[in-house]
Length: 141
Image (cartoon, rainbow, N blue to C red; front, side, top):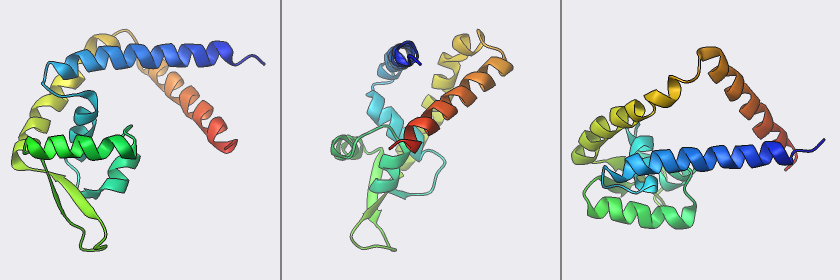
């Protein structure tokens, strides 16, 4: 079986998604990684850097710099982790939460023209196919 067409289409789809998403995120004066952190922390309890890294698409090396810049903008705060003194928990500040409440609905709305081109059955089929492909990859690692 030749998986090259599948892999190529998956990469092209990701690149198209990233380009479409990033253009909108930049209009909010955020980088895509900053947006990812804010949206991940939104409506969630504080989380450790490790958990935040697992829930975002940001590598550990990049995450520290992103958090530093968000903290400098007063959008996040780091507090000592009461459960493990060796780590910190990250949470949105009041200002960060206000930004989340503004940007998340706006970004969802930005994707409405994309969603309008697919019906619910197509979305479910694509989602299940991608999950199956991801699981196949993970099972081989």
